[in-house]
Image 1 (cartoon, one colour):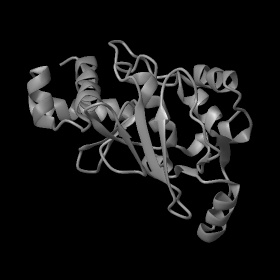
Image 2 (cartoon, helix red, strand yellow):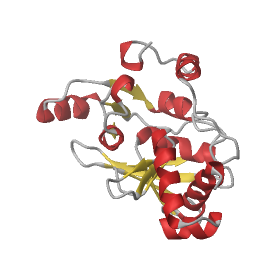
Image 3 (cartoon, helix red, strand yellow):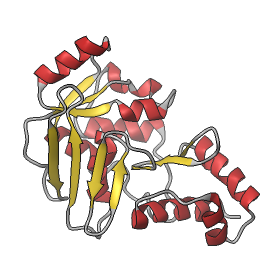
Length: 219
């Protein structure tokens, strides 16, 4: 079984249908035994192309999520869970057949609803701020926790109040244009054959190119 066939089958299913495929569905798509598919998924997870549950089910295939983590993303005919603020803002750039995507969330502190009609040409209007709690060096220690805490707040007041209420230390905060710019090219090619995950040096260069630096980003 070709691992790239398996990776693409996972991502294309998410992109087209808004949910993760089962191992049985994947076995049919790649014409391989279910046990081979399970082993292949473990290999893809080890390479950080996927996130699996303890039972071996697909939880995330960035930017797609099989579980709600605070964001919904609506296209013309499909509804996705966005894995986090970062992933949700990447999806219009990845799903290029969609003219726009409606990204919705609520403020983690006061529960005020927020929604943006995201396009590829320009960032959305709004004074909200995105906050990333976990530094990049530890994002994969528990990636579901990491993604669940990359959220968008009404403003600095709500962020500060949430940090005080939860006892968390401040991470990295950015405005919506910075988030949109950061997200725009992060997953380019992920739905194409032969996609290679960014190595640390290329990732660092990309972060610098969009104006992100400092200890939080490991730079």
